[in-house]
Image (cartoon, rainbow, N blue to C red; front, side, top):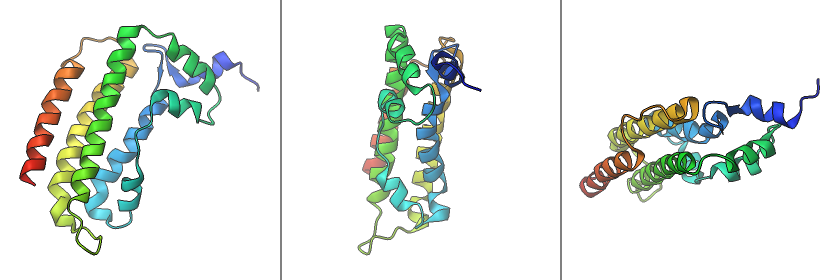
Length: 170
């Protein structure tokens, strides 16, 4: 069975938003690694260290998924305000992940190892914040402009203030 590009993109793109859910896997994977790091040390530390932000466009430009090019065309045609809100949520996710990686790696001992007890609370806090923003982003992808409980910028400011305090304490 050979599907058209439109059909392949339709299988990826959520019709409520015009955004493909698959992109959020980039964040789901790092969330699971951070959540489980204290338990699975040292196996996951290198994978966490290697994580890098990837934009929606870059993700689908490099994706082998059928319909990726059409997915990007759909994304380019999204309402500018909606796309800005989505991208601000992605920027917040990126900042939380990068901040968590930075804080986790400040707990490395001279031999490069990390004591699970030293990062358990940190991983729990960052995971909770990351999950909250990821859930809100998934709502945006799955439902479009449903009334937000919290504006993206307000959420970003609140969470980053918490992380700044945590960095200064830890």
